Length: 328
Ligand SMILES: O=C(O)CCC(=O)C(=O)O
Ligand SMILES: [Fe+2]
Image 1 (cartoon, rainbow, N blue to C red):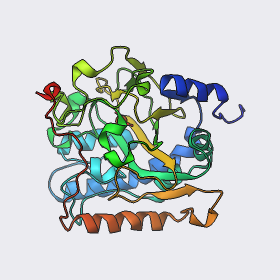
Image 2 (cartoon, rainbow, N blue to C red):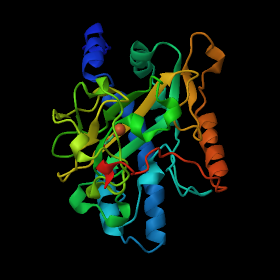
Image 3 (cartoon, helix red, strand yellow):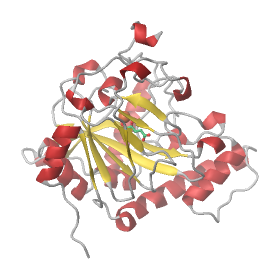
């Protein structure tokens, strides 16, 4: 068997130069993703039970594997599923019962020792798990019911991750870590990036630059740099990306599901750009007792955040006001 992949010095130089690097075969998909898939099977079963009992769906399709079952039950019910599977909360409209998912298998991914070894190569040994972390399970756009169409389930317009956090974290070293659970290719909507764009500043983002991107905060077309490169990736591969690298998620024009996680890590002690959401210390040599190892405590931290945010205290995630001429 091949030795497990690691981040090499050449990978780090490429990251400095291009603003991203893909490390192939970092996860062992069978070993590392099976518990995650099993956890999401259970989440989907609960959703399906509710859709059936609510009269939205006739057949539970319990015999199908996860991705096929999701595709069938969502297209037949027309129901949204994204928040019930996502990690982070949405930016607005949080209620006491806003769906979210914080299961032990997802916590296991966030704290996966080999993933943290790799992250350590980029940001050092004091590692904080930033609460901007999502799973995006994208149906073919042609089959996606309109009620289920959100930024988590469809294409993602061009942006820099720095543009979607608050400005207090502008000088923080936040590393985006993106990896597919299913194959991700040009047809089903892999990421595309602009190599070297991280060497420039944050550019203007608008709230409604791209009508196909549902009010996502994104870079208006004239400010997206032309050298755009798609990044097909296989399960096991991991993309490490700077928060200033221009990137987008291509539309899923296939008949297959495209499922990925995007996580973020930064050195302990810096602002996260989402101060209302809970992060945690994932690794620390200087203060090992501060490391969170209990998935239940992690889930509890999100439960508390949701309860707090549901009281309606206004939080402001969006730094953009659309007053640039580019946003007209
Ligand atoms: O998965 C996608 O389509 C977009 C993900 C993204 O923008 C990110 O990981 O920062
Ligand atoms: Fe992004």
